[in-house]
Length: 590
Image (cartoon, rainbow, N blue to C red; front, side, top):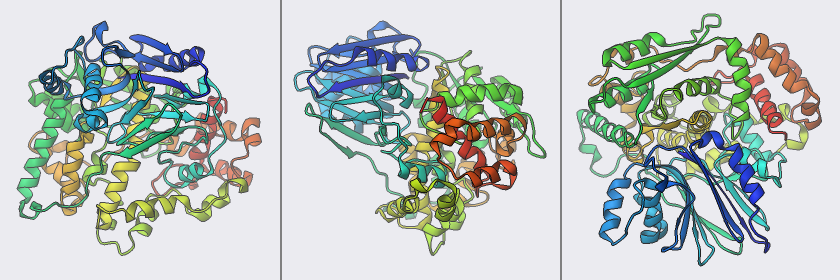
């Protein structure tokens, strides 16, 4: 797990060493164990290393193989690298290191762009061909690892974080009106390639791209799972589906034990993280380090779920750590959390993940985490209405969108008035082949888009800010492909995730399965009281916000006057959504 960066120039000048150093400096938390920068004429590459696999300097990056004429920077982990190494050795390749980085380098030489189809893992990388000046870039199937870039006629720069690109300078930081519509309407999700800034894009998940020496770029998508049963699945019994669910998850958890350092678990006490803990213990792991976090309650809303994480840790004998955070600690941490966000992320639990990661990193460098289970196994409340919806688009939008297009127009300044791009985006995604029923359309959209630019991005940002690697077994591509085939009724029965619950009963205590569905809450941000409300007010009424003029003043005043009455259909604060965007822009000097 690391931070990658690079610059390729097309204007006849050498790569800017100062810009590379600035980008690397910003990403130090992603890789405190080592730094490397190389420059050859118009091409420069840089890397920050967090040592997880092959702790020796032989796997330092940028990695250069002079014999093959290739250089590489890579962020992530290839869990099947040992098997691929054996295959490559049978083809005559010799290795000078013991990690997964060199396997990517040799794989590209052996199989070209199709190498990504052989990888099981999370990755974002760039390979430079010395003789042609061509650059090959790729991102993993579910976008677990980020890849941001700036592309102008003069230069192409890329990095693992958007703030790193800002540090290099020369970025068009004007607001993208379409991205703003997505942020305000599509539950703060800005689908790739857009970001909130016009000058910064992101490589979509499951995408590989070639950057030519003249600056032209081409790309294609290499993986799109089919949602719905495949031929032969009709003969499967419910028991068959449950057994296979447990089988694919066992494999996914086992793969994510590949490391030369201990692997812990973020244990919330919910079904997903509890099941991961149980499956890890099946592999003979005893005394696993597990971690949970809690906040003070607000009103009748509990701020922690320690009683459930205690059940699991006691049952499996883990070495459990409970971190309680009161609002006096959360508020200053929130500012640091926002400053390290690659994009504005409005979810209340960001600061929770940030603080938890800071604590976890004192004990381990790698953790497994339960993100993705709700999206792929049907755990959200908007899935059952999609099952027999006559108008899937309207049904989905009524549950998931934060506001209507009409409300959007009344909230933002008239200079940001655009068409209803969010509805158009969802419609186009629903219309793609490969998901016929309404519920499969929703599950596909949430798995391939929402999941990437909300929970997954949140986990990467906040764990890497603490130099911590997070691995997500539910997002193993084989698990996703399997879950996409599971009949919808086996996902949404009961209160959702029925098949996962039934599989879980064979591994973990029933108390954490039959409990009320929980959420990782930060109540003080949901209801915006006290110092948190003051923070929001300051952000929206300061001179920078007024000069920017994103929002209509009468709406801001109404939200500030009564924040608890302006709540989205998904129970988020509309005031916090506006405040978070302004705080992010101000933090990054935009």
